[in-house]
Image (tube, rainbow, N blue to C red):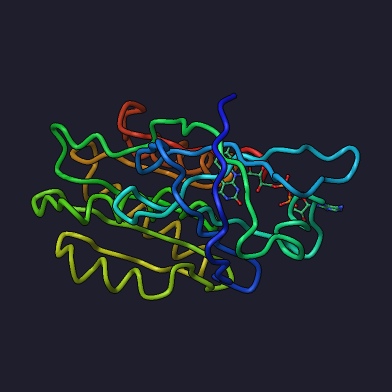
Length: 231
Ligand SMILES: Cc1cc2nc3c(=O)[nH]c(=O)nc-3n(C[C@H](O)[C@H](O)[C@H](O)COP(=O)(O)OP(=O)(O)OC[C@H]3O[C@@H](n4cnc5c(N)ncnc54)[C@H](O)[C@@H]3O)c2cc1C
């Protein structure tokens, strides 16, 4: 795997247990919004038995001009996350591999999209919305349903900035599980197969919503998932 060296520029506490790591863009490094990459430390070693590498979504768009990943670090966590939490600091180097993946809106022939994101699953959505806000298609309606059980939402003012730039963006920040499901159901019934459905979250959440949508009559071809294996 081809790795590039990047420098930690900023560490942001997004919620009570999630953190964003803002990184420099190495010379020649390219990525598309919605992609992910493998990361490993340069100057820290994980504990024996732990894996030295992790896949994280690149939560920034190329238009941000910085690389960034955001991760959840729960009370109990691996030695990899322990390094992120208590050792890695601004100025340290970290390695990022070539970006992979094709999680994206397709847009062609669609009136819009319903985006379903749970918790840390918001990371590729941040990148995609940031990217598309720079060349917004007002006719393409985006309904984003971002749920967090504790009502803790990442990225601060970004949502207000995006709404100001994108009149076609309807954003729901939801903290109740039932409301999350109700909104997904309502949006699907209102739009059926005229829109595409992007789902980003744990494999369990993605499977549940995929089944729900199919049950409502949404074609599998209109359902695009980004599976965060490991949660
Ligand atoms: C395409 C893709 C994109 C992804 N994007 C992201 C992303 O943007 N952000 C992100 O955070 N992850 C992302 N992931 C998942 C990521 O790769 C990791 O799998 C995930 O962050 C879990 O990390 P970890 O293995 O260090 O475990 P941890 O996060 O440390 O732990 C995972 C779970 O195991 C429990 N656990 C850990 N250690 C212990 C212990 N000693 N005792 C008891 N319980 C324990 C934790 O409480 C937690 O519930 C992505 C994965 C894929 C495949």
